[in-house]
Image (cartoon, rainbow, N blue to C red; front, side, top):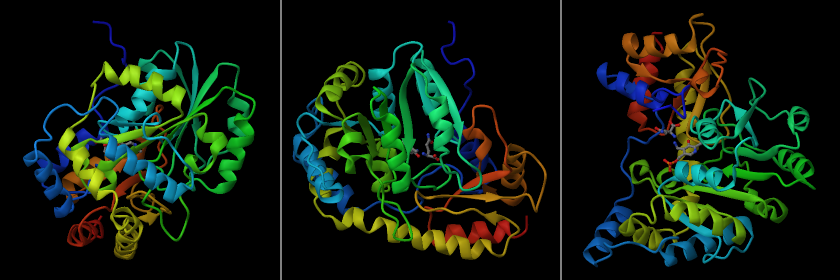
Length: 378
Ligand code: PMP
Ligand code: GLN
């Protein structure tokens, strides 16, 4: 067969996790927690199964869960969404993003996408026959250069993809960014896909700038979320997309013939669990403590830590240690020192290498301590 994704190999997450296992390294590479999820939530899943919730859920998702999401959105972002016509439960955030792109993009459409960026975006654009228009975030703060965005917009620009808090850098969008975005898209038919899977992980009292806070932007957006990220259960692969009625109708046409509906017992459990606001409101401080703990430990190393304002990732420069490429460096420290990280060049289509690696600090303190002890020897 002729490849639709000739440039694509195995994802860096698979590569680095396999290497970490092979060398018994501490895995601060792939983003997943190594501590247990809530026993209450897993108990609710068991209960749902025992209560017979084992058949297909409705195509758009279990209604009480969609209602709980709408209530949460109203509470957090001060906006009313219709759970019946604007929320669709999906098998993960990645799938929600893919489905949004497939719903909208026609061959030849241009999509503005920032780099470094989560590695599924560009293949999702290409597989739909559209054209990625890549714009570098400004190193080392990883801010958006809005003047450049303005220059790169053409009559073919169909979409802008955003991600805040940002993977891999931990950068967050500020209100100034939103104002720039607003003025940029006004009077255009540009659609926004906003990846907000880390919405509950923001530090230092920064406010998460959800697109849902801004009705003019929400009216042209698909906003994508992930329960795996919020509730420490990345293996569940459950998320959702929020979009206006007309967008959601088209989104569901694609969704219904792809997976139709998602795992029922976890939706039933989440419908109850989500009503407890502490279940998500405590996440920022929980992970901020881990970030600060890791930063403290990393002072004993020769890495220069960059700023992380959200997500469970932090980037580090290693130019005081080595001039190897970031891939060679990440592989070598996994093999020789027993700590796996992700080379940030993997998040650039052209392999831009600023000699930075990404660490995931969403781990137990003992894991972070062991990793830092090993990194001090690098
Ligand atoms: N977007 C970003 C930026 C992510 O980091 C992740 C998690 N890896 C996802 C989307 C996807 O989440 P899920 O596992 O629910 O597909
Ligand atoms: N989102 C996670 C990360 O960035 C892992 C995603 C994946 O393994 N596909 O590390």
